[in-house]
Image (cartoon, rainbow, N blue to C red):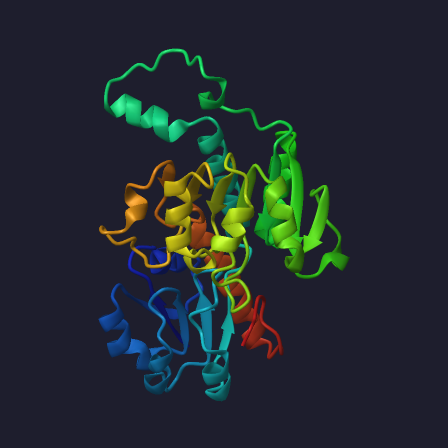
Length: 315
């Protein structure tokens, strides 16, 4: 068996070798390298480099262990037809992404981007007379979490520690609300938005969630509310968010992802009022490679035992 690790930055091979499995492996850092060498791999660990047209060259490939939790780049139909099993990395970064989301909420409430800008300008801001311009406290604020999977559920737990009121939005409300005060169906999202001081997106990207936060949804939010996106960029209709920020329909947005990544230099989001941008780094931690490798080794063991289901298998 030979494993190919394909990622531009993560040190997957280095961390895998430390496990002393005896399994052969190699690493590629560019898409062109992956295209050239995919025929050597029985198992592929990949995320952003995946292209479905690679299937034609992957004559030995039997399994893909995704490095990311997202699955929208994989064609289930084409991979199933080729007999290639695919497992996501769902769950390996749930704590990190939830912690990042609560950090973004705190950053917007405490106006930390403004403080950083003032620091760079060597400006000591004085006391503020206008009450509405001051920093906010989270206690008593309402957080609407769109997507109550592992990340959303963890975020709800963190938010309750700050005495926030939490409303969860999920497809299946019969499975309980966890730490949330209550849960509503996705079809009730528009009715929940006017109650929100913060709207956090932690949902998967799929045909039902693409452009979920559009002009209509943004118009339902309070002008004092903030949008937090740690899901996928395409869950948000970016032109509508830019318009809402410019018009003051919402108070601000903290975005860990964008429709196009890297965010183009020409994007108005860079200079839109009260926007805080992080470069899709919510799930990136010092433990990330090892967390994915734990999952990969578990799935390799299941393959060797001839089990019919891999952990997080979706193809």
